[in-house]
Amino acid sequence: MNKLLGGVAAAALMTTAAQAEISDGKVKIGILNDQSGVYADFGGTGSVEAARMAVEDFGGTVLDMPIEIVSADHQNKADIASNIARQWYDTEQVDAVMELTTSSVALAVQALSQEKKKINLVTGAATTDLTGEQCSPYGFHWAYDTHALAVGTGGALVEQGGDSWFFLTADYAFGYSLEENTANIVKERGGSVAGAVKHPLATNDFSSFLLQAQSSGAKVIGLANAGMDTQNAIKQAAEFGITQGGQKMAALLFTLAEVHGLGLQTAQGLTLTESFYWDRTDESREFGNRYKERTGAMPNMIQAGTYSGVLHYLKAIEAAGTDETEAVAAKMHELPVSDLFAENGKVAPNGRMISDVYLMQVKTPEDSTGEWDYYDVLATIPGDDAYMDPAASGCPLVE
Image (cartoon, rainbow, N blue to C red; front, side, top):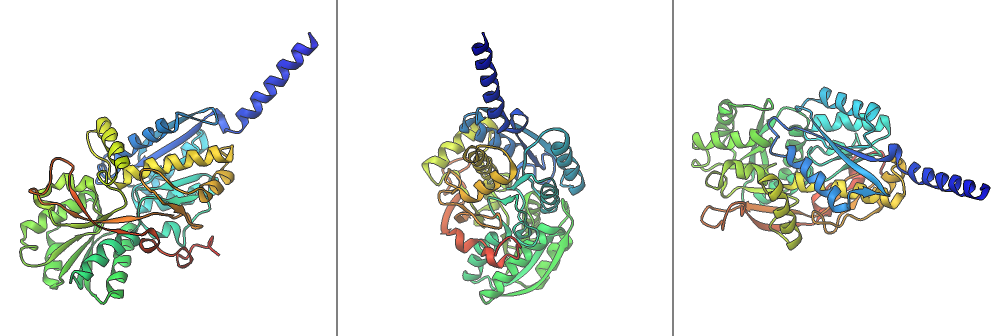
């Protein structure tokens, strides 16, 4: 009888030890983004679905413990996002927060995550400050950033003769970063900047801003904004006859979702940069079709990047044998990123995930073979060329 009791006790101890590797008996990931505003199609509920797909493809459990996805709409407000993330961390056992559309939101939540010693992974925001002066040992930046967009779209247009620029810039951290990075690339390649004007987020009327850009005489009007703001600016530029007058619109952050929203008739000919296109490889096509069955749309780089980020986080937990933050962060830096989003990705010391990006041109309606056949891939830009050298990022974690 004593031997039997001893065996039961030993088994119980072993079970407790195994469960202790995963805090609270589960891994809980929060997807925090804009689900109702100007960036709702940019990431939105599509990113939540992509996160769920990553969990399913991983097998639904990690270290024999369940994985849970929760989500919330931060309404593009840093205070709301911080309050949600704080509640998730303090009372709802959330282990990591991801997506984080809007740079002001991402910076605020990354600072909170560092304070709480929790992992955050950004796919929806663009500012290089996330892996620069405001980097975090627990912060990771996936999918794209303003430097990669500037090198891709900005660099390509200068080489095509667009050597004078005027910027329409969203009036917050993302817009400033995208304008600065693109202006630097334009100048490095022999171009000039005629000026810039800032507009509030979620602007409906771009007329005064577009008239300033038109009167500047610049060859290229750089749209340092995103989502519905970019769509509205392009539509209203067409109404003013700006492109017919010889000026070119540069959509510096434009994804498949926004092309779909505009339609090929309006978007045709635009040059843009994305780090993912569903119709590029067999693996991306298979993922894109599965995603479309669930959402009714093909994924853009934000949604596919969220899939990749969640998958990498779970792989790191598995490799570390625990969900303890320090151990998982170390594994996230150590493991290569090889999936349908990034075939040759790596995580730099500043948390920047470096992988190839693609220069795209939007097809004409005549060239498109059907719905969602929107891009020609003009060039592949190696990740080391697209992203800032970590040593030059200003991140204090980089020696």
